[in-house]
Image 1 (cartoon, rainbow, N blue to C red):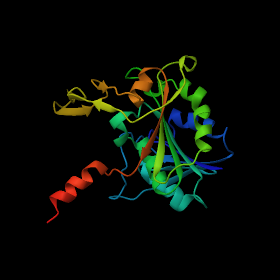
Image 2 (tube, rainbow, N blue to C red; image 1 turned 45 degrees about the horizontal axis):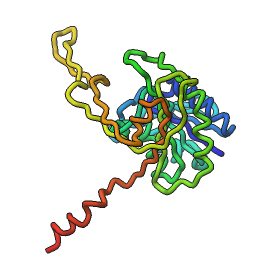
Image 3 (cartoon, helix red, strand yellow; image 1 turned 135 degrees about the horizontal axis):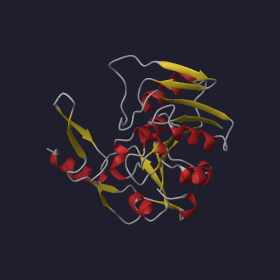
Length: 254
């Protein structure tokens, strides 16, 4: 099984080493192409206004100056002799739960894999407090990652779908198990923008991660993480709101 690894925290991020350790328990045919620098919050963006450059770091290993989506496209379209059988994206430093998946470069790299017809899984390690930098503990992901992945490899994956996995911010031995969940919903309120003044006296604004209210729903990914479970959420790329189709057709019918 040929596995492509990528992320949005950057080629040298600690979570990439965690991901590679997982992947090598599943296969010895491992390829890596990840952003050269952190691309958190890049979503499913492409680099269109300037060139993308590739740097080789060894056999089957590259970094890309672009986004996570660029990295997957370059790997499949230029760097690999054949498409991978599986794309693993992560392990992200921080949660990708609820509405956050729309911003996530980690999930978007998996989305690009799904668009290319490749089985794709995004993995994220939740952490409990801000300001941890590269000191985020990945113990839950390290201990449970392969246990989560193996069953997923044995099941049929519908076209244009992917799996989003989040590990709770607790020690591995305290994880209660694995729960299959729905995508939850965040209520961000007004507390996620931090305002400051730079050394020259000009104001700036920084999008922060604090002040987020959780709107928990039954069987949601947010609820599972809060309860101490790993969340495994199937996602689809068809964003059509089927319930609105009939009403809209009525609006435009003559």
